Amino acid sequence: MRVGVVTFPGSNSDVDALNALAVAGVEPITLWHESPDLGAVSAVILPGGFAYGDYIRAGVIARFSPVMRGVTEFAAAGGLVLGICNGFQVLAESGLVPGALLRNRSLRFVCRIVAIKPERLDSPFTRAADGAPIHVPIAHGEGCYYADEVTLDELEREGQVLFRYVRDDGTAAIDPDEPANPNGSLRAIAGVCNAAGNVAGLMPHPERMSERVLGTDEGMQLIRSLVEGANEWETAGRPAPGTDGHVAAKARGRR
Amino acid sequence: MSEFRFAVNVLPKPGILDPQGRAVESSLAHLNVASVSRVRVGRRTELTVTAGSIAEARAVVDGLARELLSNPLIETYEIELLEGTSSAVSAEAPGR
Image (cartoon, rainbow over all chains, first blue to last red):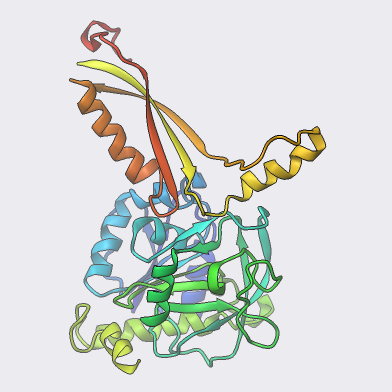
């Protein structure tokens, strides 16, 4: 199985993502930003970095690149798309996942290990996780998750909040000023998915914790989830969103 | 066709935390300025549009402001006409 990783001008975590996919046992493919053709990939990762210099707002110029036409079509057809860090910002600016990423509340670029916890284990992005807090690095200046209150309530209700920043005891770091919430994200949200459940973004970098030699391989829980989810989608004959066998139809049914 | 020059001023929406504005406010004490409050920091873009009419030009700017220069979830924008103009582009030097 092939999984694509987009390289935008300014991507810097694409190689980490390619490596993590190789560790997970799939064939990693680089997708160049100038081509809308995704080839025969079974899932797509939008990696971290500073696509197009992050000018105007992080992610917005990348949104209009040719490869995003292919990614948008792939997502509409039910394919799994995971945006990591800058990739999350690109997805949010594209409207493929809800909300926006604001300047960190501290105004500082934050680069350290944080703990996040999956909110549900029946999503294609968390299915291989054990449910315990996952320790993964963050490295961003604009990661403060924002959506209006009505949208936040809807995301909670529909199970679209996938990850939250958590304290040492595993509880959500909901105070935007507490240290366990590294950027001031509302309701401690570290990652969300779209309504159909097949497009997700998160600020932390699971692909940078893919092997023990890097300190921990805890991030592989999320990479393996993506690979398993994509494999199931392929085996089911690439079902469209809302139809039987689609990841989201199943996820909604369990909730 | 004529050229029209615009500015697009983008500001964080009221109620959205503006850490840059807050940082500016916190520096005011060092300047011994006590009379300034409610600082918001935004972004200004100036651009020239070649179009048949001002309405046509403004529509192009409005589209850009909505799609690219601002994010309607978190920001508002205002369009400012800098120079209404009658300079025909065909009369300008090529490569402009």
